[in-house]
Image (cartoon, rainbow, N blue to C red; front, side, top):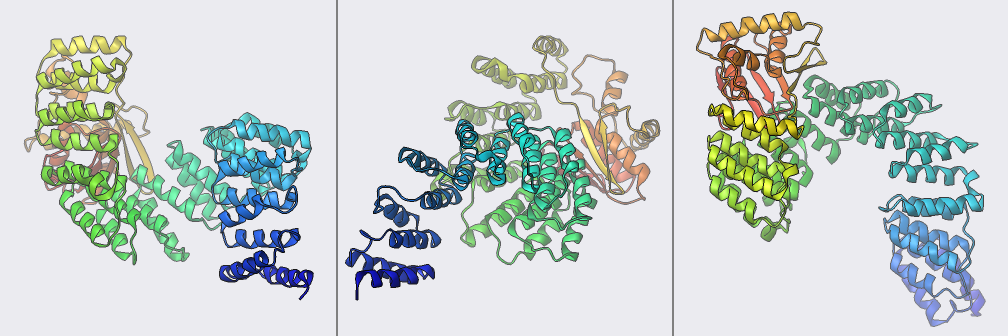
Length: 612
């Protein structure tokens, strides 16, 4: 058989994209007959085949030893695209530099693939450099190249540059518009993103996903749900949209909206992927329905680490530490390896249930057993576990010897423990230590220490600390609570005057406090951080946001129905006592999710058993 005939036959075989075993056999024949040395087309076909089968290393070897002085532009493009698609972006950019050094001429496809790679790099300068080459080459007139440039600027939040390219385009498609909307959304400018979104001639599921995820990222959860409902009237939501919408429901504690989405998914036969099921578990858990979260979890035929982690974290915030450990053990039995978030959930469960021995065992063995490096969040959770249980000295010792610099969350955990156990001396030691390390980190710690002094009646120290805080312009977060009634979420702030029904709500709250006062409730203002008269201090705690939300809920829901509240801060001792009394007097189940956990008040008792 003549070499050229044999070569043609082998080329025909390779053009059919055979399986990898046959590709290797053909490759061996080519080497044996030294055909690759004289026929570039055979090398081209082999590279195509190896890239098609994702065998990048062999393809690169063939490319590096290409028979002619330089491979054609098509092969450069194929190699750069392969690296880009497999997320080897630095290699794709490096190959592009080699292409320029070899004096090969890049075309529109080259620029598109390289710019896509730049989007995955940490330095925007790569994208700007390629953009300059595109302008010089005249390729910016190409729709796909221009779209790629907008996309890379979107990734880096360079909205002015993205808009400049968009504005100069003579032709635009849905990708052009979506990339520009994404640029503004990622930059937090949802007003501008919305303006371009509604100007779009055509919107697809990705466009909607960009807007909805943008609202979630900005904390505008109500807007995210509004856009989700608008989308569901126009298009079938994709997985990313559903996960974002469920996340918004979880943040708001919007159970009605979350239920609606779940029913919508069932009616429309939407595939129950791992991400969606994980989001459903998270939504139900954070909306106070841990039973529904469990039902979703049990329904999953093959659970993965994300499903388990969501369930464990949900149980933890409900104070069900022993159950969280049981699910964690089930996960290990299923031979799944936990990740750092899983461990955080388990430790959190131990902290809220006082399971010091179990939590300590997991904390000290997480790296040995599962290869998980201990992060600052794990230290914070373990310090919280020890502090709540009364091991203040041991918790302080952990903080002093930990290899990472403790952040304000760690210090807050320690000071919260001092407040729980009313140990002002220890609190002062912690503040002194904190000021020596980083005076700028004292904002949240000062507030906690001030509350601790107030609870012990040390008003002179409160006054001194408040003066220091005023000089540093430190401000604590404003208490804010949300309640969902008839599908609408209502927001209340401490001493709120803005709600349309606020006069009726305040009147109702006064009536409620009088009723519960008849069964033994008395306002606990020991943590009010000002030396006020007894009457003024009682008024200071009377208008806390969760009390206002509860009054609104009692006014606007049928008797004996559950009331669910979400609060941005830790609920105070007075509100905790008041809600126990209200649940008994009004025969209501009251579910409150504060900054760290759930409290379910029923028949005068709380699920936390006063351990929070």
